[in-house]
Length: 100
Image 1 (spheres, rainbow, N blue to C red):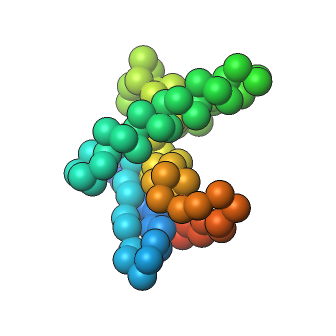
Image 2 (cartoon, rainbow, N blue to C red):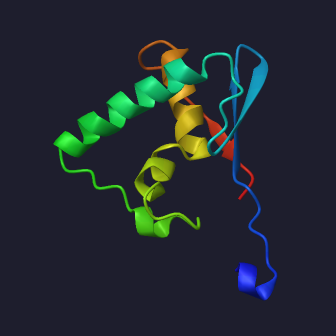
Protein backbone atom coordinates (compact mmCIF):
# COMPACT_ATOMS: atom_id res chain seq x y z
CA UNK A 1 0.00 0.00 0.00
CA UNK A 2 2.82 2.41 0.83
CA UNK A 3 4.44 1.78 -2.54
CA UNK A 4 1.26 3.04 -4.19
CA UNK A 5 1.03 6.08 -1.93
CA UNK A 6 -2.02 4.75 -0.12
CA UNK A 7 -2.57 5.04 3.60
CA UNK A 8 -4.64 2.67 5.69
CA UNK A 9 -7.32 4.32 7.80
CA UNK A 10 -6.69 3.33 11.43
CA UNK A 11 -9.42 1.11 12.81
CA UNK A 12 -11.39 2.59 15.69
CA UNK A 13 -14.03 0.99 17.85
CA UNK A 14 -16.53 2.55 20.22
CA UNK A 15 -18.37 1.05 23.15
CA UNK A 16 -20.95 2.81 25.31
CA UNK A 17 -21.19 1.99 29.00
CA UNK A 18 -23.38 3.94 31.44
CA UNK A 19 -24.00 6.70 28.86
CA UNK A 20 -20.27 7.26 28.28
CA UNK A 21 -18.71 6.38 24.92
CA UNK A 22 -15.20 4.92 25.05
CA UNK A 23 -12.96 4.86 21.95
CA UNK A 24 -10.25 2.30 21.29
CA UNK A 25 -7.59 2.19 18.58
CA UNK A 26 -5.23 -0.70 17.86
CA UNK A 27 -2.22 -0.46 20.15
CA UNK A 28 -3.66 2.47 22.12
CA UNK A 29 -2.56 2.52 25.75
CA UNK A 30 -3.92 5.92 26.83
CA UNK A 31 -6.93 4.51 28.70
CA UNK A 32 -6.41 4.66 32.49
CA UNK A 33 -7.18 0.91 32.72
CA UNK A 34 -5.20 -0.13 29.64
CA UNK A 35 -2.90 -2.51 31.55
CA UNK A 36 -5.91 -4.27 33.12
CA UNK A 37 -7.66 -4.47 29.74
CA UNK A 38 -4.54 -5.88 28.02
CA UNK A 39 -3.92 -8.38 30.82
CA UNK A 40 -7.50 -9.62 30.58
CA UNK A 41 -7.24 -9.85 26.80
CA UNK A 42 -3.91 -11.74 27.03
CA UNK A 43 -5.49 -14.21 29.46
CA UNK A 44 -8.55 -14.63 27.25
CA UNK A 45 -6.45 -15.23 24.12
CA UNK A 46 -4.34 -17.83 25.96
CA UNK A 47 -7.50 -19.63 27.06
CA UNK A 48 -8.79 -19.55 23.47
CA UNK A 49 -5.49 -20.98 22.17
CA UNK A 50 -5.89 -23.89 24.60
CA UNK A 51 -9.11 -24.84 22.81
CA UNK A 52 -7.72 -24.38 19.29
CA UNK A 53 -7.79 -20.66 18.43
CA UNK A 54 -4.96 -19.69 16.06
CA UNK A 55 -4.33 -15.96 15.55
CA UNK A 56 -3.87 -15.20 11.86
CA UNK A 57 -0.97 -12.73 11.96
CA UNK A 58 -0.69 -12.76 8.15
CA UNK A 59 -3.95 -10.79 8.00
CA UNK A 60 -2.47 -7.84 9.90
CA UNK A 61 -1.46 -5.03 7.57
CA UNK A 62 1.72 -3.98 9.38
CA UNK A 63 5.35 -3.81 8.31
CA UNK A 64 6.42 -5.99 11.21
CA UNK A 65 6.47 -9.76 11.20
CA UNK A 66 7.54 -10.58 14.75
CA UNK A 67 4.85 -8.42 16.35
CA UNK A 68 2.13 -9.65 13.99
CA UNK A 69 0.55 -12.12 16.39
CA UNK A 70 0.63 -9.61 19.25
CA UNK A 71 -0.98 -6.94 17.06
CA UNK A 72 -3.79 -9.32 16.14
CA UNK A 73 -4.58 -9.61 19.83
CA UNK A 74 -4.83 -5.86 20.34
CA UNK A 75 -7.17 -4.84 17.54
CA UNK A 76 -9.50 -2.03 18.58
CA UNK A 77 -12.61 -4.22 18.61
CA UNK A 78 -10.94 -6.77 20.88
CA UNK A 79 -9.86 -4.00 23.26
CA UNK A 80 -13.41 -2.62 23.29
CA UNK A 81 -14.94 -6.05 23.94
CA UNK A 82 -12.46 -6.75 26.74
CA UNK A 83 -13.31 -3.41 28.33
CA UNK A 84 -17.01 -4.21 28.02
CA UNK A 85 -16.65 -7.65 29.61
CA UNK A 86 -14.65 -6.18 32.49
CA UNK A 87 -17.27 -3.48 33.11
CA UNK A 88 -20.61 -5.24 32.65
CA UNK A 89 -22.36 -8.00 34.49
CA UNK A 90 -22.81 -11.59 33.32
CA UNK A 91 -25.29 -11.91 30.47
CA UNK A 92 -25.28 -8.20 29.64
CA UNK A 93 -25.08 -7.34 25.94
CA UNK A 94 -21.96 -5.61 24.61
CA UNK A 95 -22.34 -3.52 21.46
CA UNK A 96 -19.22 -2.33 19.64
CA UNK A 97 -19.31 0.08 16.70
CA UNK A 98 -16.43 0.33 14.18
CA UNK A 99 -15.39 2.89 11.59
CA UNK A 100 -14.34 0.30 8.97
